[in-house]
Image (cartoon, rainbow, N blue to C red):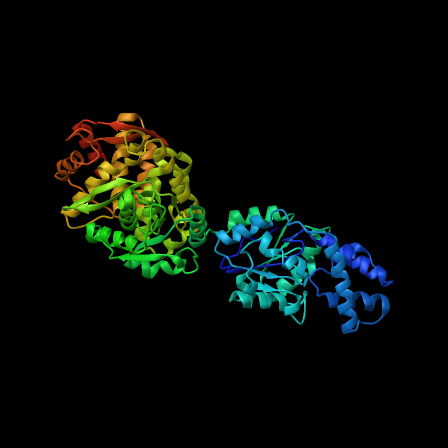
Amino acid sequence: MNKPFPKGIRAALIDMDGVLYDSMPFHTKAWHQMMTEQGVATTPEEFFLYEGMTGAATIDLIFQRELNRVSTPEEAKRLYARKAEIFVASGKKKPMPGADRMLKAFRRGGIPRVLVTGSAQNSLLDSLDTDYPGAFPRDMRVTALDVTKGKPDAEPYLKGASKAGIKPEEAIVVENAPLGVRAGKAAGAFTVAVTTGPIPREEFEKEGADAIFPSMEAFAEWLETNLPLHPAALLDEAVENISPATITVVTDENVDKAVMPLFENSSCLKKANKVVIPPGEDHKNLDSVVKIWNALEEANATRKSLVINIGGGLVTDIGGFAAATFKRGIRCVNVPTTLLGAVDAATGGKTGINFNGFKNEIGAFHIPTEVIISALPLKTLSRRELLSGYAEMIKTGLIADASLYYTLLDVEQNLEDHTLLEKGMKRCVEIKEDVVRQDPTEKGLRKILNFGHTAGHAFESLAIERHEPLAHGEAVAHGMLVELILSHTLKGFPSEEVHRYASEVLKPFYPRTYITCDDIPLLIAFMAHDKKNAVAGKPNFTLLTAPGESVIDCLPEIKDIETALEIYRDIMG
Protein backbone atom coordinates (compact mmCIF):
# COMPACT_ATOMS: atom_id res chain seq x y z
CA MET A 1 0.00 0.00 0.00
CA ASN A 2 1.45 3.35 -1.08
CA LYS A 3 1.73 6.12 1.45
CA PRO A 4 -0.19 9.32 0.66
CA PHE A 5 1.58 12.18 -1.05
CA PRO A 6 3.58 13.97 1.66
CA LYS A 7 3.06 17.59 2.60
CA GLY A 8 5.96 20.01 2.57
CA ILE A 9 7.76 18.65 -0.49
CA ARG A 10 10.06 21.37 -1.88
CA ALA A 11 12.23 19.52 -4.42
CA ALA A 12 12.38 16.35 -6.50
CA LEU A 13 15.63 14.34 -6.66
CA ILE A 14 15.45 12.21 -9.79
CA ASP A 15 17.56 9.28 -10.99
CA MET A 16 18.42 9.08 -14.69
CA ASP A 17 18.80 5.53 -16.05
CA GLY A 18 15.51 3.66 -15.96
CA VAL A 19 13.65 6.81 -14.89
CA LEU A 20 14.40 9.44 -17.53
CA TYR A 21 15.81 7.06 -20.14
CA ASP A 22 14.97 3.49 -21.10
CA SER A 23 18.69 2.80 -20.95
CA MET A 24 19.18 0.04 -18.40
CA PRO A 25 19.03 -2.89 -20.88
CA PHE A 26 21.92 -1.25 -22.78
CA HIS A 27 23.89 -0.64 -19.58
CA THR A 28 23.53 -4.24 -18.45
CA LYS A 29 24.61 -5.59 -21.85
CA ALA A 30 27.59 -3.22 -21.94
CA TRP A 31 28.70 -4.29 -18.44
CA HIS A 32 28.31 -7.97 -19.30
CA GLN A 33 30.24 -7.67 -22.59
CA MET A 34 33.08 -5.71 -20.95
CA MET A 35 33.40 -8.27 -18.15
CA THR A 36 33.27 -11.15 -20.63
CA GLU A 37 36.14 -9.56 -22.55
CA GLN A 38 38.12 -9.65 -19.28
CA GLY A 39 37.28 -13.30 -18.75
CA VAL A 40 35.08 -12.48 -15.74
CA ALA A 41 31.82 -14.43 -15.37
CA THR A 42 28.63 -12.36 -14.99
CA THR A 43 25.05 -12.30 -16.24
CA PRO A 44 23.45 -9.25 -17.88
CA GLU A 45 20.51 -9.38 -15.46
CA GLU A 46 22.58 -9.02 -12.29
CA PHE A 47 23.62 -5.48 -13.25
CA PHE A 48 20.08 -4.28 -12.74
CA LEU A 49 20.71 -4.89 -9.04
CA TYR A 50 23.88 -2.76 -9.03
CA GLU A 51 22.26 0.26 -10.64
CA GLY A 52 23.10 3.47 -8.83
CA MET A 53 26.58 2.36 -7.73
CA THR A 54 29.55 4.18 -9.22
CA GLY A 55 31.44 2.40 -12.01
CA ALA A 56 34.43 1.72 -9.78
CA ALA A 57 32.23 0.28 -7.03
CA THR A 58 30.50 -2.04 -9.49
CA ILE A 59 33.83 -3.27 -10.87
CA ASP A 60 35.18 -3.89 -7.36
CA LEU A 61 32.06 -5.81 -6.35
CA ILE A 62 32.45 -8.18 -9.30
CA PHE A 63 36.24 -8.47 -8.95
CA GLN A 64 36.01 -9.31 -5.25
CA ARG A 65 33.46 -12.00 -5.98
CA GLU A 66 35.19 -13.54 -8.99
CA LEU A 67 38.88 -12.64 -8.55
CA ASN A 68 39.16 -12.12 -4.78
CA ARG A 69 40.62 -8.67 -5.24
CA VAL A 70 39.67 -5.06 -6.01
CA SER A 71 40.72 -3.17 -9.10
CA THR A 72 43.49 -0.62 -9.24
CA PRO A 73 42.41 2.97 -9.98
CA GLU A 74 43.97 2.76 -13.46
CA GLU A 75 42.28 -0.58 -14.11
CA ALA A 76 38.87 0.70 -13.00
CA LYS A 77 39.22 3.79 -15.19
CA ARG A 78 40.19 1.70 -18.25
CA LEU A 79 37.44 -0.88 -17.77
CA TYR A 80 34.73 1.74 -17.18
CA ALA A 81 35.85 3.59 -20.31
CA ARG A 82 35.48 0.34 -22.28
CA LYS A 83 32.00 -0.23 -20.81
CA ALA A 84 31.05 3.36 -21.79
CA GLU A 85 32.37 2.78 -25.32
CA ILE A 86 30.15 -0.27 -25.74
CA PHE A 87 27.17 1.60 -24.30
CA VAL A 88 27.57 4.56 -26.66
CA ALA A 89 27.97 2.24 -29.65
CA SER A 90 24.55 0.72 -28.94
CA GLY A 91 22.88 3.89 -30.22
CA LYS A 92 20.76 6.76 -28.90
CA LYS A 93 18.69 5.88 -25.85
CA LYS A 94 15.00 6.72 -25.88
CA PRO A 95 13.41 8.85 -23.17
CA MET A 96 11.33 6.76 -20.79
CA PRO A 97 7.59 6.95 -21.59
CA GLY A 98 5.91 9.09 -18.94
CA ALA A 99 9.12 10.84 -17.81
CA ASP A 100 8.28 14.10 -19.56
CA ARG A 101 4.79 13.96 -18.07
CA MET A 102 6.35 13.50 -14.61
CA LEU A 103 8.64 16.50 -15.10
CA LYS A 104 5.73 18.63 -16.29
CA ALA A 105 3.74 17.69 -13.17
CA PHE A 106 6.65 18.72 -10.93
CA ARG A 107 7.08 21.95 -12.88
CA ARG A 108 3.37 22.81 -12.61
CA GLY A 109 3.60 22.12 -8.89
CA GLY A 110 6.46 24.61 -8.59
CA ILE A 111 8.83 21.81 -7.50
CA PRO A 112 12.48 22.26 -8.62
CA ARG A 113 14.23 19.16 -9.99
CA VAL A 114 17.72 17.86 -9.27
CA LEU A 115 19.30 15.04 -11.28
CA VAL A 116 20.95 12.48 -8.99
CA THR A 117 22.61 9.70 -10.95
CA GLY A 118 25.34 7.15 -10.28
CA SER A 119 26.34 7.48 -13.90
CA ALA A 120 29.09 9.55 -15.46
CA GLN A 121 27.88 8.65 -18.96
CA ASN A 122 28.37 11.87 -20.94
CA SER A 123 26.30 10.63 -23.88
CA LEU A 124 23.15 10.63 -21.74
CA LEU A 125 24.03 13.65 -19.64
CA ASP A 126 24.54 15.69 -22.80
CA SER A 127 21.17 14.52 -24.14
CA LEU A 128 19.24 15.92 -21.16
CA ASP A 129 19.14 19.48 -22.51
CA THR A 130 17.74 18.24 -25.81
CA ASP A 131 15.29 15.65 -24.52
CA TYR A 132 14.20 17.55 -21.38
CA PRO A 133 14.94 21.23 -22.07
CA GLY A 134 15.21 23.33 -18.95
CA ALA A 135 14.38 20.44 -16.60
CA PHE A 136 17.86 20.10 -15.08
CA PRO A 137 20.12 23.17 -15.11
CA ARG A 138 23.81 22.31 -14.98
CA ASP A 139 24.06 23.41 -11.36
CA MET A 140 21.21 21.06 -10.41
CA ARG A 141 22.95 17.78 -11.26
CA VAL A 142 24.76 15.24 -9.08
CA THR A 143 26.70 12.55 -10.99
CA ALA A 144 29.21 9.85 -10.12
CA LEU A 145 31.94 12.46 -10.52
CA ASP A 146 30.50 14.57 -7.68
CA VAL A 147 30.50 12.00 -4.87
CA THR A 148 32.96 9.91 -2.92
CA LYS A 149 30.42 7.24 -2.10
CA GLY A 150 27.75 6.25 -4.59
CA LYS A 151 24.38 4.69 -3.95
CA PRO A 152 23.34 2.89 -1.71
CA ASP A 153 25.12 5.47 0.45
CA ALA A 154 23.04 8.54 1.23
CA GLU A 155 25.70 10.95 -0.07
CA PRO A 156 24.28 11.48 -3.60
CA TYR A 157 20.83 12.38 -2.33
CA LEU A 158 22.19 14.51 0.50
CA LYS A 159 24.15 16.47 -2.10
CA GLY A 160 21.04 16.71 -4.26
CA ALA A 161 19.06 18.18 -1.38
CA SER A 162 21.88 20.62 -0.70
CA LYS A 163 21.87 21.80 -4.32
CA ALA A 164 18.11 22.42 -4.04
CA GLY A 165 18.65 24.36 -0.80
CA ILE A 166 16.32 22.13 1.23
CA LYS A 167 16.39 19.59 4.04
CA PRO A 168 16.44 15.93 2.84
CA GLU A 169 13.05 15.28 4.47
CA GLU A 170 11.59 17.99 2.20
CA ALA A 171 12.55 15.99 -0.91
CA ILE A 172 10.86 13.31 -2.97
CA VAL A 173 13.28 10.80 -4.53
CA VAL A 174 12.37 9.00 -7.77
CA GLU A 175 14.24 5.72 -8.30
CA ASN A 176 14.01 2.50 -10.27
CA ALA A 177 16.66 0.47 -8.43
CA PRO A 178 16.65 -1.09 -4.96
CA LEU A 179 20.04 0.41 -4.10
CA GLY A 180 18.77 3.82 -5.14
CA VAL A 181 15.74 3.38 -2.90
CA ARG A 182 18.04 2.44 -0.04
CA ALA A 183 20.06 5.62 -0.65
CA GLY A 184 16.96 7.80 -0.73
CA LYS A 185 15.64 6.32 2.49
CA ALA A 186 19.04 6.67 4.15
CA ALA A 187 19.01 10.35 3.26
CA GLY A 188 15.63 10.74 4.95
CA ALA A 189 13.62 11.55 1.80
CA PHE A 190 10.18 10.30 0.74
CA THR A 191 11.29 7.68 -1.78
CA VAL A 192 9.33 6.46 -4.79
CA ALA A 193 10.22 3.30 -6.72
CA VAL A 194 9.19 2.82 -10.33
CA THR A 195 9.57 -0.77 -11.54
CA THR A 196 10.64 -0.07 -15.11
CA GLY A 197 13.05 -3.03 -15.11
CA PRO A 198 12.82 -6.75 -14.34
CA ILE A 199 13.35 -6.39 -10.59
CA PRO A 200 10.22 -7.57 -8.73
CA ARG A 201 8.20 -5.25 -6.49
CA GLU A 202 9.16 -7.26 -3.43
CA GLU A 203 12.79 -6.07 -3.69
CA PHE A 204 11.65 -2.44 -3.42
CA GLU A 205 9.34 -3.27 -0.53
CA LYS A 206 12.33 -4.77 1.32
CA GLU A 207 14.19 -1.47 0.92
CA GLY A 208 11.27 0.44 2.43
CA ALA A 209 10.03 2.37 -0.64
CA ASP A 210 7.25 4.75 0.41
CA ALA A 211 5.37 4.30 -2.86
CA ILE A 212 5.84 1.85 -5.75
CA PHE A 213 4.50 2.23 -9.30
CA PRO A 214 4.57 -0.16 -12.27
CA SER A 215 5.53 2.55 -14.80
CA MET A 216 6.51 6.17 -15.15
CA GLU A 217 3.07 6.85 -16.64
CA ALA A 218 1.42 5.52 -13.48
CA PHE A 219 3.69 7.62 -11.29
CA ALA A 220 3.03 10.74 -13.39
CA GLU A 221 -0.72 10.21 -13.08
CA TRP A 222 -0.36 9.92 -9.29
CA LEU A 223 1.58 13.18 -9.24
CA GLU A 224 -1.01 14.97 -11.35
CA THR A 225 -3.72 13.84 -8.96
CA ASN A 226 -1.93 14.62 -5.71
CA LEU A 227 0.55 17.45 -6.30
CA PRO A 228 -1.04 20.89 -5.79
CA LEU A 229 -0.46 23.20 -8.74
CA HIS A 230 1.65 26.29 -8.11
CA PRO A 231 0.29 29.54 -9.54
CA ALA A 232 3.75 30.83 -10.54
CA ALA A 233 4.43 27.73 -12.64
CA LEU A 234 0.96 27.86 -14.20
CA LEU A 235 1.45 31.54 -14.99
CA ASP A 236 4.81 30.90 -16.67
CA GLU A 237 3.27 28.14 -18.73
CA ALA A 238 0.37 30.36 -19.84
CA VAL A 239 2.62 33.29 -20.72
CA GLU A 240 4.99 31.03 -22.65
CA ASN A 241 2.05 29.95 -24.82
CA ILE A 242 0.94 33.57 -25.33
CA SER A 243 4.46 34.84 -26.17
CA PRO A 244 3.69 38.54 -25.57
CA ALA A 245 5.77 41.48 -26.79
CA THR A 246 5.88 43.02 -23.29
CA ILE A 247 4.43 42.19 -19.87
CA THR A 248 2.93 44.61 -17.35
CA VAL A 249 1.81 43.34 -13.94
CA VAL A 250 -1.00 45.05 -12.05
CA THR A 251 -1.50 44.44 -8.32
CA ASP A 252 -2.36 46.39 -5.17
CA GLU A 253 -0.31 47.26 -2.10
CA ASN A 254 -1.77 44.52 0.12
CA VAL A 255 -1.29 41.77 -2.45
CA ASP A 256 2.19 43.04 -3.27
CA LYS A 257 3.22 42.44 0.35
CA ALA A 258 1.29 39.26 1.18
CA VAL A 259 1.06 37.30 -2.07
CA MET A 260 3.66 38.45 -4.59
CA PRO A 261 6.47 36.58 -2.74
CA LEU A 262 4.78 33.38 -3.97
CA PHE A 263 5.74 34.47 -7.50
CA GLU A 264 9.41 35.23 -6.80
CA ASN A 265 10.51 32.27 -8.97
CA SER A 266 8.25 33.16 -11.89
CA SER A 267 10.42 33.59 -14.98
CA CYS A 268 7.87 35.72 -16.85
CA LEU A 269 7.50 38.22 -13.99
CA LYS A 270 11.25 38.79 -13.79
CA LYS A 271 11.08 40.62 -17.12
CA ALA A 272 7.82 42.49 -16.42
CA ASN A 273 7.21 46.02 -15.23
CA LYS A 274 4.86 46.34 -12.26
CA VAL A 275 2.08 48.76 -11.35
CA VAL A 276 1.02 48.80 -7.68
CA ILE A 277 -2.23 50.63 -6.92
CA PRO A 278 -3.65 51.50 -3.50
CA PRO A 279 -6.22 49.01 -2.17
CA GLY A 280 -9.90 49.75 -1.58
CA GLU A 281 -12.97 50.83 -3.53
CA ASP A 282 -11.94 54.50 -3.22
CA HIS A 283 -9.09 53.76 -5.64
CA LYS A 284 -11.17 51.85 -8.17
CA ASN A 285 -11.19 54.94 -10.33
CA LEU A 286 -9.89 56.59 -13.46
CA ASP A 287 -6.68 57.72 -11.72
CA SER A 288 -5.67 54.07 -11.21
CA VAL A 289 -6.45 53.27 -14.83
CA VAL A 290 -4.33 56.22 -16.02
CA LYS A 291 -1.46 54.90 -13.88
CA ILE A 292 -1.68 51.56 -15.70
CA TRP A 293 -1.95 53.21 -19.12
CA ASN A 294 1.19 55.27 -18.37
CA ALA A 295 3.07 52.11 -17.36
CA LEU A 296 2.05 50.45 -20.62
CA GLU A 297 3.29 53.45 -22.58
CA GLU A 298 6.59 53.42 -20.69
CA ALA A 299 7.02 49.73 -21.52
CA ASN A 300 6.41 50.46 -25.23
CA ALA A 301 3.47 48.07 -25.12
CA THR A 302 1.84 47.08 -28.39
CA ARG A 303 -1.38 45.24 -29.22
CA LYS A 304 0.67 42.04 -28.80
CA SER A 305 1.55 42.94 -25.20
CA LEU A 306 0.05 41.43 -22.07
CA VAL A 307 -1.37 42.70 -18.78
CA ILE A 308 -1.19 40.27 -15.85
CA ASN A 309 -3.61 41.13 -13.04
CA ILE A 310 -2.65 39.57 -9.70
CA GLY A 311 -5.13 40.33 -6.94
CA GLY A 312 -8.78 40.33 -5.92
CA GLY A 313 -11.79 41.61 -7.83
CA LEU A 314 -10.69 45.23 -7.58
CA VAL A 315 -7.39 44.47 -9.35
CA THR A 316 -8.87 42.25 -12.07
CA ASP A 317 -11.64 44.81 -12.71
CA ILE A 318 -9.25 47.76 -13.06
CA GLY A 319 -6.47 45.88 -14.84
CA GLY A 320 -8.94 44.24 -17.17
CA PHE A 321 -10.51 47.60 -18.02
CA ALA A 322 -7.08 49.13 -18.71
CA ALA A 323 -6.27 46.18 -21.01
CA ALA A 324 -9.65 46.45 -22.76
CA THR A 325 -9.13 50.10 -23.60
CA PHE A 326 -5.38 50.40 -24.29
CA LYS A 327 -4.82 50.45 -28.05
CA ARG A 328 -8.45 49.30 -28.36
CA GLY A 329 -7.75 46.11 -26.50
CA ILE A 330 -4.74 44.00 -25.53
CA ARG A 331 -4.64 40.60 -23.89
CA CYS A 332 -4.79 40.06 -20.15
CA VAL A 333 -4.28 37.15 -17.75
CA ASN A 334 -6.00 37.14 -14.36
CA VAL A 335 -4.45 35.54 -11.27
CA PRO A 336 -7.12 35.88 -8.56
CA THR A 337 -5.80 35.91 -5.01
CA THR A 338 -9.19 35.78 -3.25
CA LEU A 339 -11.78 33.04 -3.39
CA LEU A 340 -14.46 35.52 -4.41
CA GLY A 341 -12.23 36.84 -7.19
CA ALA A 342 -11.41 33.33 -8.42
CA VAL A 343 -14.98 32.15 -8.86
CA ASP A 344 -16.57 35.49 -9.71
CA ALA A 345 -14.72 38.67 -10.70
CA ALA A 346 -11.71 37.14 -12.47
CA THR A 347 -13.76 35.11 -14.94
CA GLY A 348 -16.48 36.17 -17.30
CA GLY A 349 -14.85 39.25 -18.78
CA LYS A 350 -16.66 41.99 -16.84
CA THR A 351 -14.28 44.88 -16.15
CA GLY A 352 -14.90 48.35 -14.78
CA ILE A 353 -14.26 51.27 -12.46
CA ASN A 354 -16.43 53.28 -10.11
CA PHE A 355 -17.59 56.68 -11.33
CA ASN A 356 -19.55 59.53 -9.72
CA GLY A 357 -20.31 57.38 -6.69
CA PHE A 358 -21.68 54.44 -8.71
CA LYS A 359 -20.00 51.03 -8.58
CA ASN A 360 -18.67 49.72 -11.91
CA GLU A 361 -20.41 52.57 -13.72
CA ILE A 362 -17.76 52.63 -16.49
CA GLY A 363 -16.58 49.33 -17.91
CA ALA A 364 -16.31 46.89 -20.78
CA PHE A 365 -16.64 43.20 -21.53
CA HIS A 366 -13.11 41.87 -22.07
CA ILE A 367 -12.55 38.11 -21.76
CA PRO A 368 -9.16 37.28 -20.19
CA THR A 369 -6.88 35.08 -22.27
CA GLU A 370 -6.26 32.89 -19.22
CA VAL A 371 -7.36 32.69 -15.59
CA ILE A 372 -4.88 31.01 -13.24
CA ILE A 373 -6.77 29.18 -10.48
CA SER A 374 -4.87 28.10 -7.37
CA ALA A 375 -5.80 27.75 -3.71
CA LEU A 376 -2.24 28.63 -2.61
CA PRO A 377 -2.76 32.44 -2.42
CA LEU A 378 -5.88 31.88 -0.31
CA LYS A 379 -3.68 31.04 2.69
CA THR A 380 -3.30 34.78 3.22
CA LEU A 381 -7.08 35.29 3.63
CA SER A 382 -9.14 35.48 6.80
CA ARG A 383 -11.87 32.93 7.39
CA ARG A 384 -14.49 35.62 6.78
CA GLU A 385 -12.98 36.43 3.37
CA LEU A 386 -12.92 32.73 2.47
CA LEU A 387 -16.58 32.29 3.43
CA SER A 388 -17.55 35.34 1.39
CA GLY A 389 -16.10 33.71 -1.72
CA TYR A 390 -17.47 30.32 -0.73
CA ALA A 391 -21.01 31.69 -1.05
CA GLU A 392 -20.38 32.26 -4.76
CA MET A 393 -19.23 28.64 -5.06
CA ILE A 394 -22.44 27.45 -3.39
CA LYS A 395 -24.39 29.64 -5.81
CA THR A 396 -22.63 28.10 -8.80
CA GLY A 397 -23.48 24.58 -7.66
CA LEU A 398 -27.11 25.51 -7.03
CA ILE A 399 -27.61 27.01 -10.49
CA ALA A 400 -25.73 24.48 -12.62
CA ASP A 401 -24.28 21.40 -10.88
CA ALA A 402 -26.17 19.60 -8.13
CA SER A 403 -23.24 17.25 -7.50
CA LEU A 404 -20.94 20.22 -6.85
CA TYR A 405 -23.53 21.77 -4.55
CA TYR A 406 -23.89 18.65 -2.41
CA THR A 407 -20.09 18.35 -2.18
CA LEU A 408 -19.83 21.97 -1.04
CA LEU A 409 -22.37 21.44 1.75
CA ASP A 410 -19.48 20.03 3.81
CA VAL A 411 -18.17 23.54 4.37
CA GLU A 412 -15.51 22.81 6.98
CA GLN A 413 -13.88 19.98 5.06
CA ASN A 414 -13.67 22.03 1.87
CA LEU A 415 -12.21 25.05 3.62
CA GLU A 416 -9.61 22.97 5.48
CA ASP A 417 -8.51 20.85 2.51
CA HIS A 418 -7.07 23.17 -0.12
CA THR A 419 -6.90 20.33 -2.65
CA LEU A 420 -10.67 19.88 -2.36
CA LEU A 421 -11.20 23.63 -2.38
CA GLU A 422 -9.12 24.08 -5.52
CA LYS A 423 -11.02 21.29 -7.25
CA GLY A 424 -14.30 23.04 -6.41
CA MET A 425 -12.92 26.40 -7.56
CA LYS A 426 -11.93 24.98 -10.93
CA ARG A 427 -15.35 23.40 -11.41
CA CYS A 428 -16.99 26.76 -10.65
CA VAL A 429 -14.76 28.48 -13.19
CA GLU A 430 -15.56 25.80 -15.80
CA ILE A 431 -19.27 26.43 -15.29
CA LYS A 432 -18.95 30.20 -15.48
CA GLU A 433 -16.71 30.06 -18.55
CA ASP A 434 -19.18 27.78 -20.31
CA VAL A 435 -22.07 30.13 -19.51
CA VAL A 436 -20.10 33.20 -20.62
CA ARG A 437 -19.03 31.47 -23.83
CA GLN A 438 -22.69 30.94 -24.73
CA ASP A 439 -23.83 34.42 -23.61
CA PRO A 440 -20.88 36.83 -23.33
CA THR A 441 -22.94 40.04 -22.87
CA GLU A 442 -25.69 38.82 -20.54
CA LYS A 443 -28.59 38.69 -22.97
CA GLY A 444 -29.96 35.35 -21.76
CA LEU A 445 -28.30 32.31 -20.16
CA ARG A 446 -25.69 34.38 -18.30
CA LYS A 447 -28.48 35.72 -16.10
CA ILE A 448 -28.41 32.46 -14.14
CA LEU A 449 -25.24 33.81 -12.51
CA ASN A 450 -27.42 36.44 -10.81
CA PHE A 451 -29.08 33.87 -8.54
CA GLY A 452 -29.04 35.16 -4.97
CA HIS A 453 -27.89 38.61 -6.07
CA THR A 454 -31.17 40.50 -6.46
CA ALA A 455 -32.07 39.85 -2.82
CA GLY A 456 -28.39 39.81 -1.84
CA HIS A 457 -27.78 43.34 -3.13
CA ALA A 458 -30.81 44.47 -1.13
CA PHE A 459 -29.35 42.97 2.07
CA GLU A 460 -26.03 44.65 1.22
CA SER A 461 -27.74 48.04 0.83
CA LEU A 462 -29.75 47.57 4.05
CA ALA A 463 -26.56 46.75 5.97
CA ILE A 464 -24.97 49.98 4.70
CA GLU A 465 -28.03 51.91 5.84
CA ARG A 466 -27.59 50.39 9.30
CA HIS A 467 -23.83 51.04 9.28
CA GLU A 468 -23.33 47.28 9.73
CA PRO A 469 -21.82 46.39 6.34
CA LEU A 470 -21.93 42.83 5.06
CA ALA A 471 -19.28 41.40 2.74
CA HIS A 472 -20.62 40.80 -0.75
CA GLY A 473 -20.60 37.00 -0.37
CA GLU A 474 -22.29 37.22 3.02
CA ALA A 475 -25.11 39.27 1.52
CA VAL A 476 -25.45 36.81 -1.37
CA ALA A 477 -25.60 33.92 1.12
CA HIS A 478 -28.69 35.55 2.70
CA GLY A 479 -30.07 36.50 -0.69
CA MET A 480 -29.92 32.87 -1.79
CA LEU A 481 -32.18 31.79 1.06
CA VAL A 482 -34.81 34.37 0.05
CA GLU A 483 -34.59 33.27 -3.57
CA LEU A 484 -34.72 29.57 -2.63
CA ILE A 485 -37.94 30.34 -0.76
CA LEU A 486 -39.31 32.09 -3.87
CA SER A 487 -38.17 29.09 -5.90
CA HIS A 488 -40.18 26.81 -3.60
CA THR A 489 -43.37 28.89 -3.64
CA LEU A 490 -43.29 29.70 -7.39
CA LYS A 491 -41.29 26.90 -9.06
CA GLY A 492 -41.72 23.86 -6.80
CA PHE A 493 -38.15 23.79 -5.48
CA PRO A 494 -38.12 21.13 -2.70
CA SER A 495 -38.90 22.54 0.75
CA GLU A 496 -36.43 20.18 2.44
CA GLU A 497 -33.61 21.63 0.30
CA VAL A 498 -34.53 25.16 1.42
CA HIS A 499 -34.22 24.14 5.07
CA ARG A 500 -31.09 22.12 4.39
CA TYR A 501 -29.35 25.17 2.94
CA ALA A 502 -30.44 27.31 5.90
CA SER A 503 -29.40 24.79 8.56
CA GLU A 504 -26.18 23.42 7.03
CA VAL A 505 -24.75 26.52 5.34
CA LEU A 506 -26.31 29.88 6.17
CA LYS A 507 -26.91 29.70 9.93
CA PRO A 508 -23.67 27.94 10.98
CA PHE A 509 -21.24 29.91 8.81
CA TYR A 510 -22.57 33.36 7.97
CA PRO A 511 -23.29 36.34 10.25
CA ARG A 512 -26.96 36.77 11.14
CA THR A 513 -28.83 39.70 9.67
CA TYR A 514 -32.12 40.30 11.47
CA ILE A 515 -34.92 42.06 9.61
CA THR A 516 -38.16 43.44 10.98
CA CYS A 517 -41.54 43.85 9.32
CA ASP A 518 -40.62 47.49 8.80
CA ASP A 519 -37.50 46.47 6.83
CA ILE A 520 -39.44 44.49 4.22
CA PRO A 521 -40.70 47.47 2.14
CA LEU A 522 -37.18 48.92 2.09
CA LEU A 523 -35.66 45.62 0.97
CA ILE A 524 -38.23 45.34 -1.82
CA ALA A 525 -37.49 48.93 -2.85
CA PHE A 526 -33.78 48.08 -3.10
CA MET A 527 -34.63 45.02 -5.22
CA ALA A 528 -36.81 47.16 -7.49
CA HIS A 529 -33.84 49.43 -8.19
CA ASP A 530 -31.36 46.63 -8.90
CA LYS A 531 -29.34 47.46 -12.01
CA LYS A 532 -30.04 44.04 -13.53
CA ASN A 533 -33.80 44.61 -13.76
CA ALA A 534 -35.05 44.69 -17.34
CA VAL A 535 -38.19 46.60 -16.34
CA ALA A 536 -37.75 49.58 -14.04
CA GLY A 537 -39.25 48.96 -10.62
CA LYS A 538 -39.89 45.27 -11.30
CA PRO A 539 -37.46 42.94 -9.46
CA ASN A 540 -36.04 40.28 -11.79
CA PHE A 541 -34.94 36.96 -10.30
CA THR A 542 -33.25 33.77 -11.37
CA LEU A 543 -35.06 30.95 -9.57
CA LEU A 544 -34.58 27.18 -9.32
CA THR A 545 -36.80 24.17 -9.89
CA ALA A 546 -34.21 21.87 -8.25
CA PRO A 547 -30.52 22.04 -7.34
CA GLY A 548 -28.71 22.54 -10.64
CA GLU A 549 -31.83 23.59 -12.56
CA SER A 550 -32.32 27.34 -13.18
CA VAL A 551 -35.03 29.54 -14.65
CA ILE A 552 -34.17 33.12 -15.68
CA ASP A 553 -36.30 36.27 -15.93
CA CYS A 554 -38.75 35.44 -13.15
CA LEU A 555 -40.92 38.43 -12.14
CA PRO A 556 -42.72 37.62 -8.87
CA GLU A 557 -45.50 39.82 -7.63
CA ILE A 558 -44.66 42.11 -4.71
CA LYS A 559 -46.85 40.03 -2.41
CA ASP A 560 -44.80 36.93 -3.32
CA ILE A 561 -41.58 38.71 -2.36
CA GLU A 562 -43.17 39.95 0.89
CA THR A 563 -44.20 36.37 1.72
CA ALA A 564 -40.68 35.07 0.95
CA LEU A 565 -39.14 37.67 3.27
CA GLU A 566 -41.61 36.75 6.05
CA ILE A 567 -40.67 33.07 5.67
CA TYR A 568 -36.98 34.09 5.70
CA ARG A 569 -37.60 35.84 9.05
CA ASP A 570 -39.25 32.73 10.47
CA ILE A 571 -36.45 30.42 9.34
CA MET A 572 -33.68 32.68 10.63
CA GLY A 573 -35.48 33.16 13.96
